[in-house]
Length: 88
Image 1 (spheres, rainbow, N blue to C red):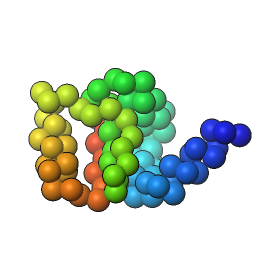
Image 2: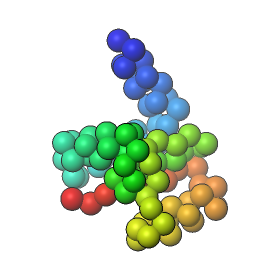
Image 3: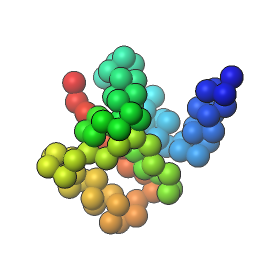
Image 4: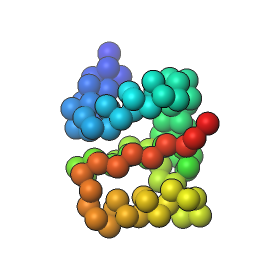
């Protein structure tokens, strides 16, 4: 029961992220996306990272990863939403 409440709370605090993740599940497959999120939540970099209105989820991509430049841009410009996920 606690897990569902946290998930609902996350969908409320990061609604654009939730929509983006749902789209990625359709594009890349739920097993791949869920695996990336699980790994990122365990602290593995380069799998999944999202930020939305001051909330973050996952682990940032390492500075040497090609996505790192986009990630830095999102932080420096204070964008309201940015999502990054590994590619299969």
